[in-house]
Length: 427
Length: 210
Ligand SMILES: Cc1cc2nc3c(=O)[nH]c(=O)nc-3n(C[C@H](O)[C@H](O)[C@H](O)COP(=O)(O)OP(=O)(O)OC[C@H]3O[C@@H](n4cnc5c(N)ncnc54)[C@H](O)[C@@H]3O)c2cc1C
Ligand code: SF4
Ligand code: SF4
Ligand code: SF4
Ligand code: SF4
Image (tube, rainbow over all chains, first blue to last red):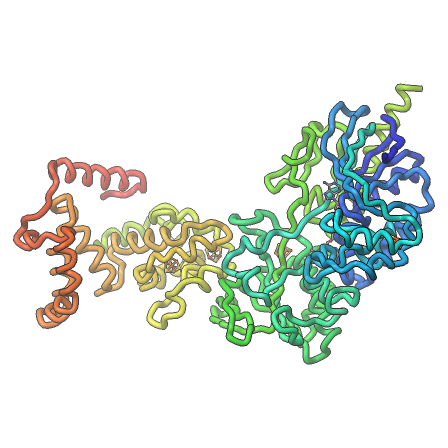
């Protein structure tokens, strides 16, 4: 059984992305007890699936490493991975929370030696790489994963292969009898930081995502550019592995659209501008990027970044929301529409199309197991109804990392104030 | 007819957007357009040289006060009602209906293009169907086929012979209609009164003398 020490002076943080980690660290560094609950087998959230960060083009692993060092140095944070909050009862200052823990089948003895992976034969979808590739059923989700502990996919449990995998482990780290369990813990305040998910591109039917292999999303493109990704960092198109040098980016794919997401997702203009740099880096002057846009929203200080990309002769901008995509015989996606600057029709083929899909909350307001206020897109709002539950990061809005971290610090402060009050009342 | 045009020009001065908002059906949506271009890219008219302005251009022209260019345009009449634009518009603007609304308005104030075939069809259909309270298919087809002269009419009729016979067999076309027979409605006076009242109400709503 997993044991968790928590009282009504503890703070529960749900979601271990950059926002949740920040909130947990800020609160713990003021001396509070924190429980951090993360659904994935590792911490870091979506940011660790990015190749580089705008605006400084640094590697996400760098920021993660700093946070992990703070985390390891702090005994007041208990981390639960593969864990989900299923129920919240009680009130501000005294919550009782049910957490469901999925079995990892690997315990803390794991040294990440990788022996189990070598003997495993079954392959499962590689969730870390947005299912662009496969991994063996005994796997480390990513090289940078924290905790550095392997996972055994439930699909092999009960098979002879599972026994082979177990036999390969010299450290007694594999426990095939692990079961799903539910723990109940106390908390005085809750920080809700479950982040975002990419909008389901298949719903934008004229773009034929899911049907045309060479129409992909921006999150998938991050994995294609990453040396740790499924192509080893080569930008190759999925249909035939051809080098993709002429790449189209379609902005507002699902955002600012009454038929899809009503809001502007705010980061996706910047994400595409950033991704043109991946194309430039990979192919030099042979790499051509075309951004099809309604208007470019590079907010405040990001304007400089935009101007810099605009000055690159290998990047061209077409002011137009693409009407539809067709596919040529050689697999090239062809974009149809009208350039509204001059009303010029186009029917342009590209090697690869990247849809700049928007963000929606990964857990919509209505699905949070407590009474909370959310907006029409499902983002958690700041409202007295929420009592001791405070939103942080992309659970509250479409934000970049910088703003997600700011909102996390604010949420941590509010949570700290609640448990301080509890402490004073009990003193 | 052109009095109506003068009346409206005087009323709205140079505010053509307001004129469209108040006078054309669904015209109040025009200001919601964000010029994304998806309707233009989706409109079959845009890929046809004879059809001058796709919807997004029409909306921008309205906002720019290009009254003559919009009212004289063939575009609204060429709209095929395919609804591509309407289903894709990120603002859910009822583009197809606005196109028809502007066409109807241009016609009403006597500004529609001359010899416009769709206008001819619409007019013929309207007269035919309001006269007896029901469409007389045979007379409607006759009027349309013979609009460009007898020889042309016979040619068109011959080409469609097989289809016509099929319709007669299936009971969808009654040859008696050619002689003014065929189906009618019970209370034609009532229908005429209803149409007159509707016209009166609409004129009142749009603040003009009918
Ligand atoms: C293509 C792309 C490129 C981007 N590039 C940049 C960039 O270069 N620079 C930049 O600043 N920003 C960038 N962003 C934005 C950045 O990804 C977000 O700002 C950031 O991920 C927000 O972090 P978060 O912690 O709020 O959410 P997330 O990263 O989504 O973390 C949420 C965490 O909560 C967990 N979780 C979800 N549901 C539950 C649950 N029920 N129970 C427990 N845990 C749960 C998730 O597993 C996840 O670990 C980019 C985004 C995209 C799509
Ligand atoms: S589970 Fe065992 S074999 Fe697998 S990586 Fe961990 S220690 Fe090595
Ligand atoms: S940030 Fe840019 S691409 Fe994203 S929704 Fe807003 S305008 Fe569209
Ligand atoms: S699709 Fe809608 S918003 Fe876009 S240009 Fe056309 S009418 Fe305007
Ligand atoms: S409904 Fe009319 S305006 Fe709209 S796309 Fe079709 S033809 Fe063009």
